[in-house]
Length: 160
Image (cartoon, rainbow, N blue to C red; front, top):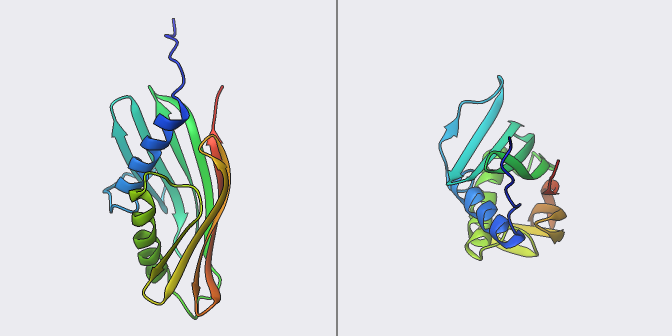
């Protein structure tokens, strides 16, 4: 017999998502064993909550983040990022800019909404619509007004 567990409220969910994102990719979390060759897996857990970010690629990459509450999937986000101008930025530089910019965003207690950050000569911008329950967004990096990197994302709550 399955025990019924109420789904988490949006505020609690968003708080956990921000903590998990800050502790994994942005925070330099320790990678877990990947599920298949060529993939990367980052995980974070706290009590009944767990988070996984699994992706493939490097200079261009695609991935999915999933949050479970009491082992039940409750939220997911997919993303695809790529260098628009590889002659002007490389994957390692884009990663450093993203980590610096998102560290500031997550410190505000959120991961959605308008956000810009100047990181040396790079301008990071994140725009999104919706809230933690259903959203779409785009992040870009520019140098001297030229877009050099882009990532598209979407996600929200999931239910059986």
